[in-house]
Length: 336
Image (cartoon, rainbow, N blue to C red; front, side, top):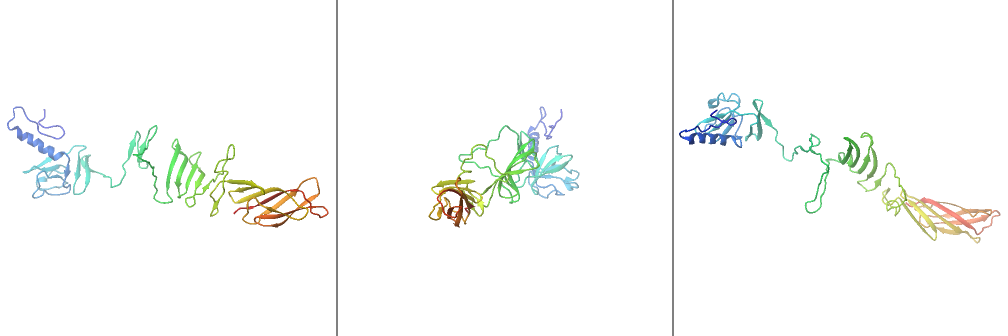
């Protein structure tokens, strides 16, 4: 049996050994030198003139004086002399004057990169991370919960032209993405092959206006606050419902989100003169007004003065006399 331990070369006490404390203290000195190994330097070529007790150094090639011939070894001052220990595979040391972490590998001290302040390390939970996916999780579900109040998931990008989004994949091929990709507008887009993408919905960051580049289809009844409601526009962009409708004593109207308006009514003309039709909803400018009279008689409808809020209507027979008859009238224009 060897007199030294296998890994750290600590001396063993021998049976019936005299002055056991000497051997024991030598082992403690070596432990003190090796545990929490932090050395003063790895480049000092010669021993310092007055080393502090316990001072430790990694010896460079060509070291001189009392260090001569000990390149690569760990030297420590035991208070009276230099002691030398040969490093083993995997030993680690921290160099104080360089703030560098080293590991003994392949017969030399190799530097281990330290993370800079704020640098993220790679972390894999049940799967392997990589340089892009530094945090990787393989699980049936991932829970992010509150710590007593609310909880936000924040996805930040450096500039407007970068991407901050959630990407949904099938077999590692993109199928849907939502977020701000390439600009600050929020968009939802889909793909059938991971190569070609179609934007189904986008929300303008400047106005909040929703765009449907591929159009929209409503299966079932045309209803809901986003379809029927109050239309509106701001800076040429729709900010309300798709359609607005209404009716009253002067007829009915339909407004479209793009600014188009239609008004219609059935009124009775007068044999005494013109009839003024006030539209059920005002136009932004005089609309185009047309109509027809009731069938069964040779009658013609004529439109007189047309304004943004009303139009003059008359009905005539074939000999040029005004007649009283039912007339269907339609006005088409814009509400903005």
